[in-house]
Image (cartoon, rainbow, N blue to C red; front, side, top):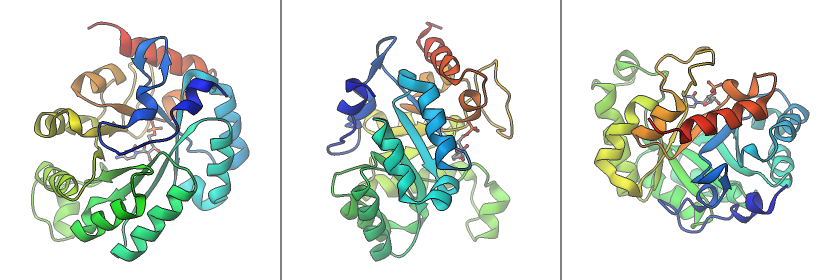
Length: 258
Ligand code: C5P
């Protein structure tokens, strides 16, 4: 655990004030943009990974798989290492339930959490009320696994990009200050919403890593240049023989000039 890590684990109001990672320096005076996805089967595996990566990464994403298996205890355990937590449970329910669920997540001390913007304005406002400025609420627009046909199936017969922008606008209108976006949407979102919107991007791949099942990727360097603030990276770090070295290598690549 390091002081730098823990110093950033409280977030004030949201938006570009996603202070924790901005305040964490490694390699050079540039914020550390890495969030490592803890896509592992249990708490022991999660803690082993955090231990092996050490101070190269300040934030970890706990998603549905790990949370459903281990419950809030895994959030507490990872947090106790000094790391920051991105709880990616993508809440989508009636406003009252979302408000209380976000409140419960905040009580766990998470730094970031996700809601589906498709839940509509009232649900988004309820999420913001539940958070009460204690955590940054990120909006998920259209999942990258969805395509035009998926949207048509559920009654939204519009191009994916239109739906992404529509939902991002809805989110911002109702108080969301950050979104999760695929690498290919980052640049447009940055142009339209400016620097006030925090953009978190999964699906990035260094040139030396396997693509795995990710289809539309950018390198970490390209995603940051396109305007991403933070990168969610799983297997290119977690599946390497030396995950700490992989994280450090990615950070060094991001910092290289073009
Ligand atoms: O191993 P990999 O780098 O592909 O992991 C990416 C992480 O980001 C996974 O936890 C995955 O669920 C998540 N994610 C994604 N694409 C999205 C949203 C989340 O890959 N559109």
